[in-house]
Amino acid sequence: MIRKPRLRLKVAALFFVSAMILTIVAAYANEKKAEETTPVKETNAIVDPIKTDSGLISGMVLGDAGKGVRAYRGIPYAAPPVGVLRWKPPQPVQPWTGVRECTAFSAVSPQTARPGQILPKMSEDCLYLNVVTPAKKTSDRLPVMVWFHGGGLAEDSGNRERFNREYLAQKGVVTVAVTHRLGALGYMAHPLLSRESEHGVSGNYGTLDLIAALKWVQKNIAAFGGDPDRVTIFGESGGGVKTTAMMASPLAKGLFQRAIIQSGSYQFLPDASRPLKNAETLGEKMAVALGVDKDADVLASMRMKSWNEILEAGNKDTELDGMSLADLTVDGWVLPDQVYNIFQSGKQNDASLIIGASKSENAMFKDISIGASSTNKGNSKAYVYVFNHMPSNWKKEGAIPPHGMFMIYAFRDIDGLKPFFSDMAFLMNGFRTPGSPDLIVPKNSDPGITDTDYKVSDAIMTMWTKFAATGNPSIEDLVSWPAYDSRNPQCLEIKEPLEVKPWNESAFK
Image (tube, rainbow, N blue to C red):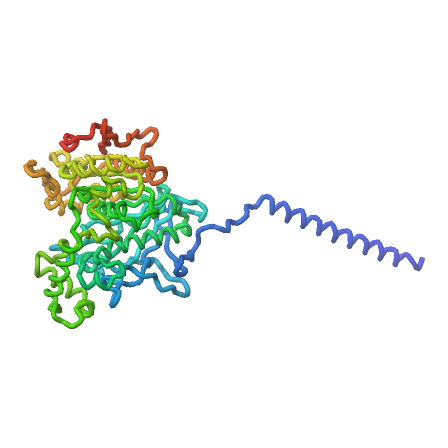
């Protein structure tokens, strides 16, 4: 009788231990089941901060809920080209510690405003780029599109809102917009600059900036979910000239695989670029205009001048204005020969090409043909287009698309049509061959935007991003766009509906 309590205690203890064992086993089973049913957290997800080769950066989200993309603005790709670095090739970025907030655009390269134009903040410290990515993981390896802005080689920047919105990225590409040196600061040559250069040349600094930006893309774009082996460079007007320069420069070899030239193909004509000696002569005239040509150290004196003084000196002499100084120079290093000769001899960088112009730009027929036929001599293909869409009200007046309008559709900036009206008269007749009739400038400031405008824009973005992804812009159930063939040349007329037509001078009529 005395032992019964002890027996009961032993039974209770045994029950307690058994319960504990069962609890542990059940907990283990539940944990195992949770491991099997709960997705493993992605270790390569794109989250801020992103690590670049110079330091960590953070950005912001653009777009509607569920369609948001990540945007990074004002990322430095080279050191500020100021002081002793003015008129020198771009130098590496100084690495930083901590996280750099990249949510605001940089200053733009110094330039002269047109009448009535209000420019953003300007500075020689302008070597920055902007990235917009729809990627969710670094392993997405999406195609990359690098935008070179227009404005000749003397105006504008890669910082316009139009170039940095979410729409192209939402088509499945990582976009990059570049800002670089312009005008005299970006393209002026001088005999003393050539003498101090290890390559014995000067000028083309803006072109070297673009090459530095493409090298940045090669090193860093994978961190944004981009594919460095599928890079497309593209630009309109002056941006098309920059794109052509990249195709022609041996320094850009291997930095891109495809190119799109929109209304900027004049470099394909013979003798389009200036020889180094001619460029150096303009630089000597700039030293005279600045009043430093007799100084003991001319270059040091020129580098002491503010960028405002350099712009002012150029504006006082039409031979030295931004547009005159801003030109590609055949220097034997960045540009070893005229673009025409490089393409005719098949020495250009191998890249598939889309090339074309707006309906009003019939002066570009010959150089577009040269660019397309020269590209098709290599391993790559060329595709030619003519843009022939106008919003409804302007179309009723008989107007056809002028220089620059294509950009509005390529970036889905349809609301940008209304302010574009103020530039219409200036742009309408800039690229007509001599003797061509004047074009009709619409009188109605309301373009008459309809769903068709958005449809045309979507078609362009779909073809451009498909080309960036594959090298072929044809889209099933949309258009079969044939590659250029000199035996039977054809082009795509971009309007609604899209139409393949013979490529000849009547394509602009």
